Image (cartoon, rainbow, N blue to C red; front, side, top):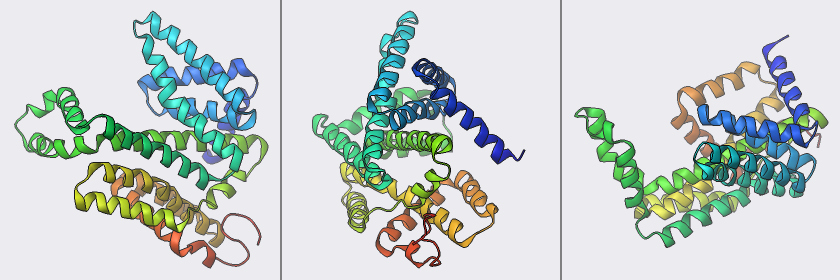
Length: 314
């Protein structure tokens, strides 16, 4: 069996186990959450379990699974002397996924889901700046303590880090917010893909290829980011970073739509994702730019007329 089909079958079996019952879903969400302590990518699987239940069974089912798994994490943390660890995990990992799942379930639109996620994240970052007058100094103090052994060294890397630390600290609130929103979106995508594997084969690809945000959102995102950099206002730069995140996924959607419509060889997508790993900053910037331009130019409208790139016939 080809590796791609074997992987699909493995995840389909995992999704079937999640949908076998509430106990199984709670057990898997809890197991993946614990494994995420040692290997962070498991947090995506944990979030995907909650997302799948919320999308298929309903929000009440998703909340029940998240609440029961959070209670189990709390008891586990209590036994280990850190009772708040489990609750903080549930709030930071599962609550955003549940919020986005509610929007996706109601709208079946990835664009609307991403916009709601960005709105909540941007408000959170800006409120943080209002409540904490010098949040950058707080982050710098925390990072200096965490990186003290490295900062005390006398080499080129340590000197470069000491010089960059104030700037990084000023943007850390936004960086954390981008990371959290990215994690929630990826977990939701994984859960949606599992749902499609079980109940609507091919449906996830069709939805993802149709990802398209309005042009005004691109103008606001680019304008906010550029103004923040130009005026050296961290709160604006961080807001722009968050607003640009959905356009990275739109750039991916454009490439997938072109691949689907033009019947490109499978190596094209493989090469793109390989470059995304090997040259991440450059590829993220390029795909984000493609997504933002597509919001205004609509590249997919120019694809062959027998398909719109989303897999649907016109």
